[in-house]
Image (cartoon, rainbow, N blue to C red):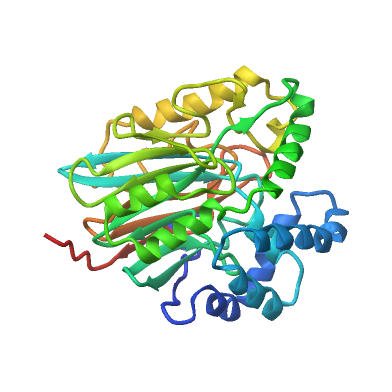
Length: 360
């Protein structure tokens, strides 16, 4: 099957109506996404989904997110369980690179998640906020932003930060994940993906976006990669709930801190969750960072030349590259194979070229 014969990623204009309108117009796609993702879990998980929804709803309602009423409306309209759980979940892994080409910053990223269907059902939502238009790579029913571009302003993406470990054995990793979730329950800050959406809606330039992402308390640790429109406007922001470290060189990221420190452990997912050791998890993250940092081709000359192993792996569900100075966004969805090899494309490469009016 050739790439051109695959389905095209929808670009939905929801500048009026936002994610609620996107969910209303894409209700069938939202249900299909939920059903596909559930196939990753044991069959009994569907029975627990209403309870997971209630937990996620309580947590999000305690946060400082302004988008909780929007999730309420989406859940009420769609009428099936899983909407709150989707909006309270977080990606397992990803890799990002910010670099200048011919004096213009570009951001390239993958999103790795073990759930099937995420690449197949991805959409590009054309949205609007007080600071102007932006494009959000997202799914119907989801209100946050993991990957986005505001033409003429900036582009940004989220990587999941490393895991705080209380134990060291791989089998006890789920215990640490659960313990961290309990700790997060007491924190009332905004979730990072919803903060990033707020930044796209309200920040007029790279510098304002950077300071907001650095200074706003967040509900859980996160790694932001941010690029602007002028040469050198690029950074990686490593965040804990209330602290940050920002670097303007070596602007690549995976799922560990740039300077590794105990007891934080690089994120891994899928079938590695109970088998991958502490050092192996760090090696996995570092190898992805080094691979994308070592890309010596040109993003401008051809799409996704940087998408090679181990950046490209069996859990890769999304690849995107963005240049806000040119108003260019390219997105491709991927999914797993029956042989459990490298994820394969399930959509065409969708390119959006938007006017990029840059303030002098």
